[in-house]
Length: 373
Ligand SMILES: Cc1cc2nc3c(=O)[nH]c(=O)nc-3n(C[C@H](O)[C@H](O)[C@H](O)COP(=O)(O)OP(=O)(O)OC[C@H]3O[C@@H](n4cnc5c(N)ncnc54)[C@H](O)[C@@H]3O)c2cc1C
Image 1: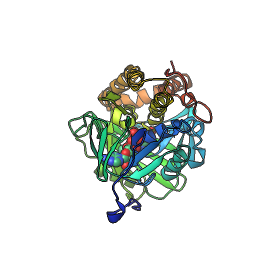
Image 2: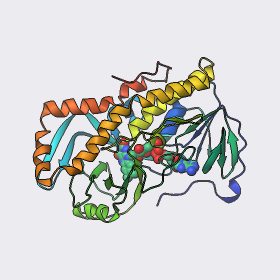
Image 3: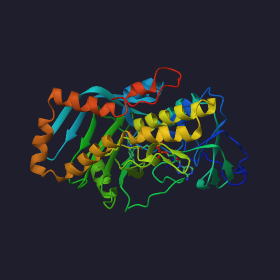
Image 4: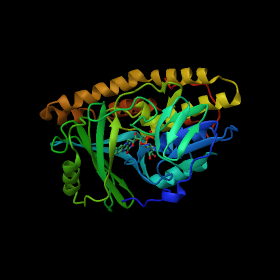
C-alpha cells in the first residue's frame, strides 16, 4: 500500500484562497496545465486529495521524447527500442521508430511540479456550483477552473461504470527485472483487451486491461503474473475512459481522463494528458495576460480538443475490431504487421496524434493552438 502523507484530522483546516486559476487534480494533466502557467503572473492553486506523487495512477510508460521535452528525463527507469507482442501462437518483436520509457511516478510528479509556480493543498473535490468548487475543506472560487481529476469528471457530468464507455485496468508491481516492453493479446487473459509487462529497472508492472468494463481483470492479472513467475503484489487499478468527451462544459476546462483524452485501443493517456494540458495552459495564459477573454479561451480549447475527435474515433474502431479477429488469424496478422515499413508508418502516425514537439523547448512559450497535421 502507498504510504499516506495526506493531511488528516485537525490538519485539514478550511481552505482560504482566492486564486486566478484553480486546477483540480495534480497528476499528469493538472501538473501540465500548472507548468504552462508558470511565469504568467497568475496566482494558481492546485488541489488533489493526495499529496503530489503519492498515488501512482498508471504503469507509467510514455514516449521517451515527451519525457525529455518536458525535462523529466531524470525520472526514467528503463527505455525500450522494441515492442514485443505475444499471441497464443505467434511472438513478434517490432523495432519502433521511437522509444518508450518507463518512469518513476513520484519523481516525475516532483520534477513536473518544480517547473510550475503554484500553491498546493490536499482536499477532496466534491462538486461545483458555477465557478465555486466544493471541497471537504470548504469552497474555493476562481474565474478560471480546470478539472484534471481523472475519469470521474467530478466538476461536470460524471460517468458511472460499468455502463459508461470505460475500460478497466489493474496491475501488480512485483520486484524483478526484464529487458522488454511486452504485451499479450490472448483470450486466456482478457476477451477484449491486452495484458502487459513493463519493466522499470528493479520492478515489473504486470497488468491486464479490458475494453469491456464488465470483465473483472483481477483473476487474470494474477494469472499473467504467475505465468511470468512473479508475485501478484502491489495492486494498482482504475477505470480508463475510451471515448473523447466535451473538453469544456459550463465554463470549466476539462483535461486528461476527465475529457476522455486517453487513447482508445492502447489506453495511453499520459502523453495526451500532457498534450491537452499544455494546450489548456496556453489558453489560460492568454486570459491571464488580458489578450484573450475567458469565453474565447473556452471556445478555442474546446475546438482544439474536438479537432482530434476523428483520430480518437479511428482508434476506437480499431479497439472494437481487434477482439473480433478470429484467434487463428490473429497470429498471422500480427506477423504481417511486423514489416519495418508498416511499423515505422503506423507508429509515426500514432505518435503524431499527440507529438512531443507540441511541448516546445525549455520554458513554455505561448504558441498558436494548432495540432500537428
Ligand atoms: C492500470 C493502468 C495502467 C496504465 N498504464 C498506462 C501507461 O503505461 N501509459 C499511459 O500513457 N497510460 C496508462 N494508463 C492510463 C493513464 O493512467 C491515464 O490516462 C492518466 O493517468 C490520465 O492522467 P490524468 O492526469 O488525466 O488523470 P489521473 O492520473 O487519474 O489523475 C487524477 C488526479 O486527480 C485526483 N483526484 C481524483 N478525484 C479527486 C477528488 N474527488 N478530489 C481531489 N482529487 C482527486 C487523483 O488523486 C489524481 O492525482 C493506465 C491506466 C491504468 C488504470
